[in-house]
Amino acid sequence: MEEKVGNMKPKKDFTKMRTPHTYVIIFGVVIAAWILTFLVPAGKFSTQEIEYKDANGETSTRTVLRQDSFRYDYPLDKSFVFDQLEELAQNPSEMEKLDVPEEGLAAVLSEGEKNLTQEKLDELSLTDDVLYDEYGNKMYDTSKKLHKTAKIWGTDDFNGFGFLNFVFEGLVSGDKYGSAVGIAALILVVGGSFGIIMKTGAIDAGIFAFISRTKGLERLALPLLFFAFSFGGATFGMAEEVIPFSMVMVPFVIALGYDSIVAVTVTYVASQIGNATSWMSPFSVAVAQGIAGIPVLSGATFRLIMWVVVTGLSAAYMMFYAEKVRKNPEASLTHKTDQYFRDHIKKTADEKVAFTLGHKLILVEMLVVLIWIVWGVTQKGYYIPEIASQFFVMGLAAGIIAVIFKLNDMRINDIASSFQSGAADLAGTAIVVGMAKGILLVLGGSDANVPSALNTILHSIGSLLTGVPAMVGAWVMYIFQSLFNLVVTSNSGQAALTMPIMAPLSDLIGVPRQVAVLAYQLGAGFVDAFTPVSASLIGVLGVARIEWIKWAKFQIKMQAFLFALGTIFIMIAIAIGLQ
Image 1 (cartoon, one colour):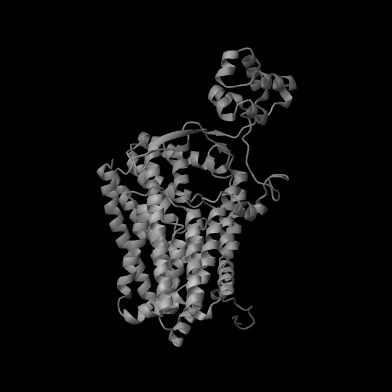
Image 2: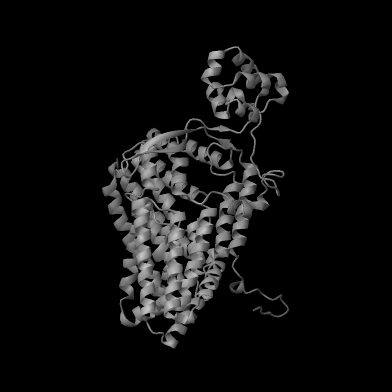
């Protein structure tokens, strides 16, 4: 409300101001990223394929950048390159070595120097990387650094990518195996499947039965669940898999007297803490160690101790907050939005829903499918397409059981309509996943071989670290990896981009490569629980009906706590010379 004092203007009550919508926040970040591209010139690296031993001892390959190959995006020096092409035309052996077709080269030369473009050179197998290896910066007009800045509006087919098209471009980026289109599709399928399961009433009945029979055990349940999800993150890089688990855990944790923030912390945050401190995750530490050229899964004892300590302290941090909420529910940042779940739980309790055989069969079926998923991910390498299919099977089977046992008077059409409404509930979350990916596109993308402002930032940070003391260098590496994860949330992608620079750089400043990997995994893991660019986090927050800004108010304090723990272990690793 507003209140007047004398003839003075009414004062605004800032406590009544509404927090920005997640879409508004992301759009603000998109604008900031777009402005940054005007200030930071674009740069690129040459890339190469490397082989390394993965966590299973098998040889894997990955495309990584070459640490010494950074250059700014300059215009082509047509005069110099055309002269070299004329010389090349007189040297058949060199043409054969570079795989340059004689007829194609003759055609380019006949068109003249003015019409020379990199696209035409690419057709001759004379890519920018090949020419740079041959001639270095002499192939460029270095008088002007180019910027890769998106237009205001446009598409790839008309005038080039414009940042106001970031939603669509973000949504359709990637493939079925990852962000954004794969995860957005996974969220919709999982939402639909759980729409069916929630319609059956099995989860509500199960939660009510559990709580009525296990009074007083809730304080033990949360830490155990925290360690379980952390273990999942540490062993098989659990992230997207948390989204469906959260659909069960959010109402369960709220029914225990806590809030949705506790539910997200005990599931998604725990999994990312496990990922950050992992001794064996095939998607983070194993990839980073392979790229850094150190034995995969080395340093496991140190990391295992770190996992136990950090997980235990983080669980204690969560319980401190959880107990405050249990004693005073209105202290929760999500007290109002959690009313949706509380009303649902109260209705179930008031109706005294019987825990029938049909409900039990659905919960058993859910448990079997969850075990199937964990087995598939860990033993068979199942990923997003397989997980989506498994959850569809879960929802369909639950619906059929509900129809047979007439749970909530469900009929065949109710299976379809509840799938539709469940998917609709998470449609907004799926859009956020695409929006978040759009931020990266505005910055020029995360491809090391394509000029972007992000590549220039990566190179600049690496250059700044040269010559600093080992303790300071390791800590700055940790800070950089944390900040880098704000925009590049793929653990393996961040490893491919940063470790080829950080590994040799660590040699120069006296930091063991093992510690450089540690700085990477701590920064990449912890910040995944905070950044709005994380598709998995946004998916879990959507399930819990939490706006990102409210989540950030809670999580920023926990991030400070986790950063302090990470700093301590980085310093210990330097002190003991972790190898």
